[in-house]
Length: 422
Ligand SMILES: Nc1ncnc2c1ncn2[C@@H]1O[C@H](COP(=O)(O)OP(=O)(O)OP(=O)(O)O)[C@@H](O)[C@H]1O
Ligand SMILES: [Mg+2]
Image (cartoon, rainbow, N blue to C red; front, side, top):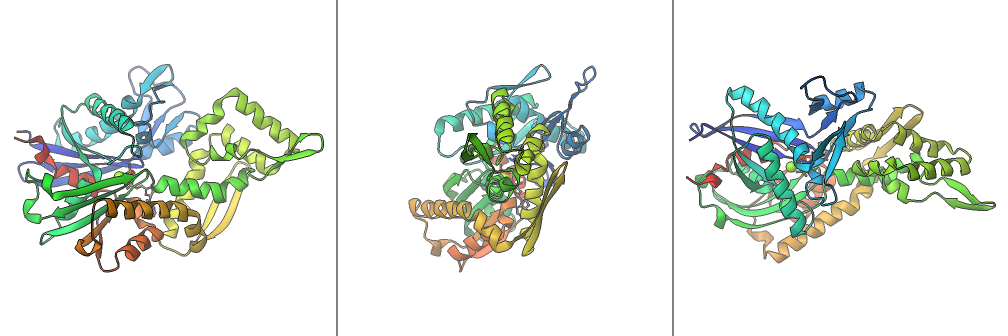
């Protein structure tokens, strides 16, 4: 038996690895990195990799004047059949190659800590990678399996992320409980209803304890997109008017702004045709100042930094009633006070979609709220006030618990070694 096992939570925004000592049955330490890769503008010399991963990716990207390729939310391409590969400095990278870069980084950092080459891991996966599509789901799981192999793992099992979260919570319990776990991350929200029993931690017969699980493809990224649409795009010319033909004034197409509301969509602007269209709108809008901001955003690759400002506002509003949406780069100047009620209105549609999904989940699985002993919330998005209110309103009499929002899944995965059998 190997002495160590890694629990790996490969997340849309953050990825974590928990080191589990199979002899002492304890977690030694947990590593967490943002799921970001930056490929330098200049190719690497000799065999040195030309990329950096995690926290460093942000500073490298900024120091490089944002000229290289910055890759965020790579988890979301796992299920996308239209993505086959991307070329970076004449090298081809498919989805597994990109994911492997992050897994390898985690593995190297952990291997260094234990002084061994650990090749055994329980890797988490969301309940659905992409809504309810079985084909896409299979594709994502296959790609993730390949990524693990590329990163150097030989013995790999998969566990649903919310079950991982539940197992971390189980360690803290004194008695058996029926628990509803909600893991609200960057890309997905997953629910699991299960029986937790501290006496069963690590045991092999857990199948019957899992009563139901399900998920929806909404998370913190969706909230940021909604914010960008409502509060960001007006600064980039969403309401700009231009003279389409002499005397005929129209508003520029909304579709341009849909594309700046999510990070991955920004590539859309790379085509020559769209660039020409944008220049034409600018010209026929008589050089509208706000529309110019859109051109500055695209030409200078500023998407990530705008989303950083949006995320900062959101995080502040998890603790305060008002926060400034503030962005000043190049000629772009945004300064707007956002109050909590205004923010809650912006994200209401997404929160309601989560609420409807939860209702449907309860109904379909015949879960009676009276039978739930406690609720366990985890993931970064569980800190959003409207999300907490949603759970308090739905289950007023149930205990609301939360653990370490960023590490609990990885820890629980590390407690899932039973999946390997004997
Ligand atoms: N204090 C906070 N308030 C609100 N949202 C937050 C806070 N801190 C982090 N977030 C958001 O939480 C999300 C990241 O959470 P987490 O690390 O749990 O996701 P993930 O595991 O990477 O994603 P997924 O599980 O969907 O793959 C991001 O959208 C981030 O903006
Ligand atoms: Mg997660």
